[in-house]
Image 1 (spheres, rainbow, N blue to C red):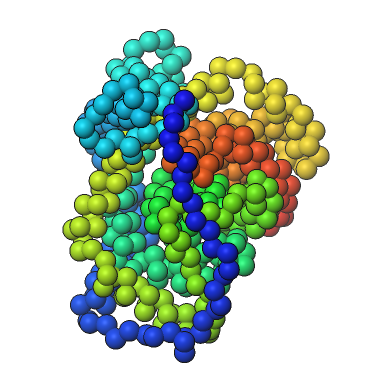
Image 2 (image 1 turned 30 degrees about the vertical axis):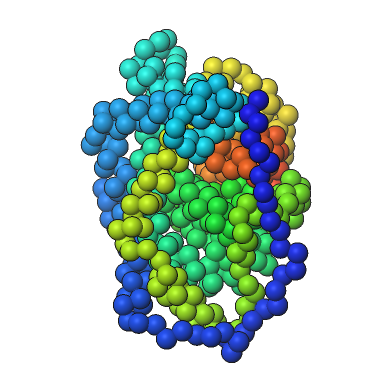
Length: 476
């Protein structure tokens, strides 16, 4: 076992009193700093938020860039993915052997130090990456819903998403965007979800970009003392959402693209409902409010909507004045994103491949779903024998339940469309990513399984009611 020193933590014992706008010294900023914030905000908003028509649908430029890279240069992305997974496994091995005194390296490799479990998973990823890239081994390993899906879809996407997303999200965050969005979101985030307002940006990054980008933002803020451990646990398990674009993919797969706005609204409400409930009960409520760096909590603020806007602009421009240049922020974001990708991509491959193979080639989830058949039937959802296992199998990969119900009745398809994207926790990607990125929280396997089960218990009756309401409106 590793003998890493115990991590130093900080706590905030007394929350400071709330301020009003009159108590804040509003700055008189140079027009250059105002322009710096405005341009950075516009770049981020354009890349992550602006809907543009693309191949008959609306999506955001970020999704277009990632899709174009993976579709146009699949071989290059494959070589890159294999190389970065192998590098991550080797660097972790070097770091762990150095930490154990087995070897002595002259460079600081502490970034890649890990627990024994994740060391093993990264080495497993190192061994699997050439196998998946070269497509050697038995055919069942490379099936369209198992190895091929994991390698050509998830690994390729995450490997490209994080470095590119990190460039633009770092520009946005470091030059005032975090302060602006966070300040405006305070009246909503704290009372509903017990989170600082700045957490709204993490969630927004997930909604419009990818949970990978949202988790990158969370890690970045956590390391600087902006979040304590409970904040991180809450964001990672309740707000690392499936992107809007992927909800569209789900709707299209189930031949329900005409109902996309309804599915998305139901999904949004489900995430909010689960968040409100789960932050107030274990395991989330048991996580300590400890910081891993000098605490920088948000100081409470009171005022009118216009006061919040003025305060938000003040905070944002002040941050832009202190922040890096555009090129410095972009380069640091790219490097940080690249390092993070090397850290987690092998883990995602190893755990995700095991999860999808378990789902595709064993009856485990049929057995687990059997007790839910009468429950689903009692809630009035048709095709209960097919829908019940689909409510459970989503823990392996959120897209698998969708594939199981493509031939079922409209009510069943709508039910699973909303449920699959609302469960959030799945072990083809999000689960291992969260555990690896936030081992210092820590986020444990058993907690993720428990939260998946709790989300499912909350969501099944809620989405069943939504399904009947949509049907009553004549939409199903």
